[in-house]
Amino acid sequence: MTRPATKGEVAQEDLAEPMPSCSSHPDNPGIIRIDHLTKIFYEKNRSVTAVDDITLEVMRGEIFGLLGPNGAGKSTLIRVLTTLLRPTSGTACVDTYDILRDPEKIRSIIGVCPQNSTLDVELTAYDNLEFYGKLVNVDDRILDERIWQLLEMTGLDNRAHMKVQTFSGGMRRKLEIVRAFIHHPLILFLDEPTIGLDPEARHEVWQQIARLNEEKTTIILTTHYMDEAEKLCNRIAFVDKGRLIALDILENLKQLIPAGDLIEIGFDRVDDKILPALKAISLVNSVAVKEQKVIISARNGSKVLPEIVAVFEKFSTPMTSISIRSPSLEDVFIHLTGKKLDDGGQPEAKPSSGGRRL
Ligand SMILES: Nc1ncnc2c1ncn2[C@@H]1O[C@H](COP(=O)(O)OP(=O)(O)OP(=O)(O)O)[C@@H](O)[C@H]1O
Ligand SMILES: [Mg+2]
Picture 1 (cartoon, helix red, strand yellow):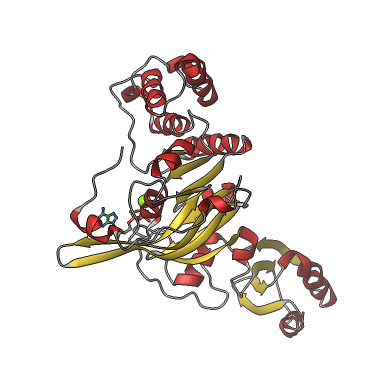
Picture 2 (cartoon, helix red, strand yellow):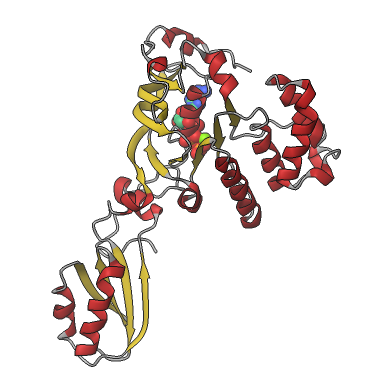
C-alpha cells in the first residue's frame, strides 16, 4: 500500500530524527503525539511546506477534528501519521509506535478512509470488504461474520452482492468507512468523510462515525464543513497553510472572538436613552441599532439576557422579537485568519465590530 517516495522525498528522509520514547508511556492519554512535524514537497524549482512545524496530541477515545481550507495540509498530515509519507522533520508517536521506526505496527492498529475513494466499483459490497479484510489479516474464520456485521451496521446488507457502481455516493462512503474498521482498529482516520454528500447522507455518515466512536475507537477526521466539526468533534484543530493556528474544545474556540454572542431585539419604537443603559451592562461589548432591531454583542449572552430585558421594561419599550446566536466555527476561523474556510485561502475583509458573517 505504500506509495513509492518521490525523488524529493527520498532526499529528505535523512532529515527526520526518530523520537526516542514512543513506547515509554503506554498509558499516556495522548494516543497520538506529534512533535514539531514538518512535511515539505520539493518539485523542480519550488517547494511547498504542506505541514509546518505542527505539535499536538490526540487523546485516547476522542473524535478529533482537523479543520482548514483547501490546501491547508490536512490530508498530508493524515498521510504522514498513517505512514504513507515520511516527514521532512519532526516525528510522531501513534500509540506506542514511532511513525519512522514502526510503520508496519502502526498500520496494524489503524484504519484509514482516504479523501479519494479506493473502493473497487466493479466488485460487490461484500467482495470489497472481503478483499480488504484479507489485506489487513482478519482471521478467515471470523471474516464472513464480520462482513455481515458491518453491512448491517450501514444498512447495506440487502445490497451485499450488488456491484458498488450501482451505489449512491452516501452508500459508497458508508461502505468505505466501515471497511476501514473491519479489523477493529484502535484509531480511525477519516479524510473528508462526507465531502460531496447530500444532507441526509451526511447525517447518516455522522451517525455511523458516532457509533464507531462509542466502541472506544479514537477518530481523527478532517473536514472543511464547520457544522460537521461542531456536531462530531470533542476537540478541533484549525490548520491554515500547514500551521496549527488553534486547538481546543468548541466552546473555548468560540471564546476567542472578542465580540462574543450576538443578541438581536426587535422593536416598534425605541427610547434613545435605552442605548447608553444597555451599554452600561457589564458583559455588553457593543450596542447598535439597525432597521427595527437593537443588536447587542455580549460575552455570555444567555447570562446577560435578563438584564437586557429588564432595561427594555424600565424604558417601557415593548420587544417584538428576541434572538441570541453564539459565534460559529466559521466566525472563529475568519477572526483568526481573515478568510473563510471554503474559499481555498482567499483573504476576506475583516469583519467590522458586530458585523461578523451571519
Ligand atoms: N504529493 C504532493 N506533491 C506536491 N505537493 C503536494 C503533494 N500533496 C500535497 N501537496 C501540496 O501540499 C499542500 C497541502 O495539501 P493537502 O492535500 O494536504 O491539503 P488539504 O488540507 O488536505 O486540502 P483539501 O481540503 O483540498 O483536501 C497543497 O499546497 C498541495 O498542493
Ligand atoms: Mg485533503
